[in-house]
Structures are given as C-alpha cells and as structure tokens.
Image (cartoon, rainbow, N blue to C red):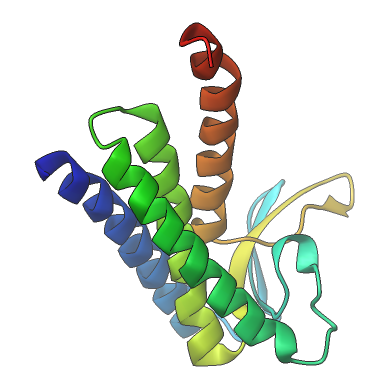
Length: 158
C-alpha cells in the first residue's frame, strides 16, 4: 500500500507543477503574447479546446466534456493499474505521469473550457504545437509505457 500511495503522490505532484506553471504564465502573459527565451524556444499563451495537436479543436464545444469524461475514466483505469503493479517501477511510473498530466488538463478544461499551453519550440520557422507541463508528463508516460510493453513484456515472456 505505501508504494501505491507514492505513485499517486507522483501523479498529484505532476498536477501541482502543471497548475503552478500555468498560474505563473497566466499572470505573466496575455493571450497570444510571445516571449523569446532562446533562438528555438518561446513562451506563448494560447488555449487549446481540442486534444493533442489541436485534434477536435473546432468541434463546436462538445469535445470539452468528452475529454473531461475520457480523462477521468482513463485516470480511474490507471489507478487500478497502479494498484495492481505498485511494486514494479516502470509501469506505475508511466501510469502516474499520464494520470497526473490528464487530470492537470482536466482542471483547465473545467476552468477555461480549453487547455492553457505555453511552451513553444521552433526551428527554421517551423513551430511544434504549443504544449504544457501536463502534456510533457503524458508524452513521457506514454513513451515509458510503450518501452515497458516492447522490452519488459518480452523479457517476461508475455
């Protein structure tokens, strides 16, 4: 049980870091404002009503609650997965990162109707879609989950 609580605490830490970073950006920038930090990285405040890469961003509003319900359902499933595999390392780590990121973005969807994004990577005039701490946690968590499934599941003969 203590390891289970530790994994849930990691998810909570992701939520806190995500929300604190967004609070700072919302207080420092106006919508659409861009601050160049390096030649390849800007801070910019934008809101994404869709999912990753603005998927369904122009769907008319129903997607807000669809993504809220989906994230809560997936987080429930991830909680069960963490409980079942709490003694392991890679799988519950991945699940905790994904859950923390998903719930961090749920808070934005409820508060603003969209997700606040502010990290803007770019090169040679090409910009990666803006993202945030929650999106980063989800991406790292998914990469770890794929790694675990491809390499650790093979070792166990699954």
